[in-house]
Image 1 (cartoon, rainbow, N blue to C red):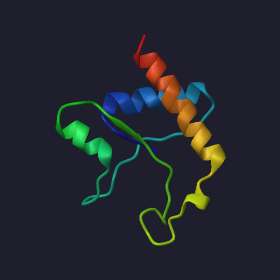
Image 2: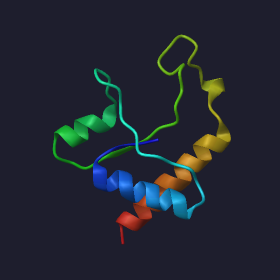
Image 3: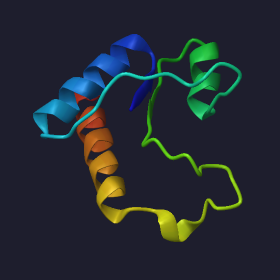
Image 4: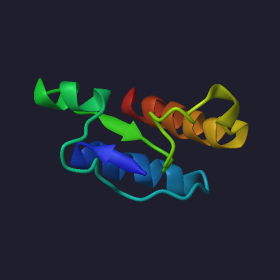
Length: 87
């Protein structure tokens, strides 16, 4: 899920698609937030790459639940997006 500034969400989605990764624009539920929002509030575009996880920020949220494949895909998309932004 791609959450944040519209332009960066679109660009991250295009990059993900080019890498063969599934993605979709999404949003943080009302009343919730994440670190990206502080940047947006300060006028700095930001994108939050998120995998839906019903256990995040609960007592069941533990490091051993991290999927190496999911993390690798997220890093691949983020790295390719940063490289494109640097062009």
